[in-house]
Image (cartoon, rainbow, N blue to C red; front, top):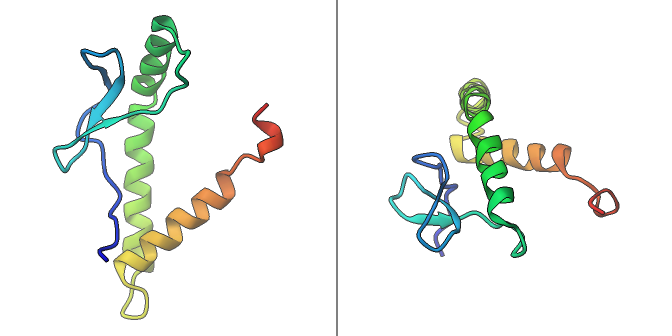
Length: 102
């Protein structure tokens, strides 16, 4: 079974003809961003604006992640393993406890 690779957005999110917030991945496929089903048009517009506003910061974060992987990879820690370590560390450190989501 092939291991899934992370998908990098090729472009910023847009509203499709069905009113869903979507983006095209670097693999050419369309991905739907999961928003709560009761999100209204204004809510979607706010989310899109926030995502556009954070785009440059996300690019800087991506560059830093690439730099980190290049720094730590070695014959003992290949690029893929370094990526998994990075993503796991970020997920753990950024995870919000369920009690804080209410």
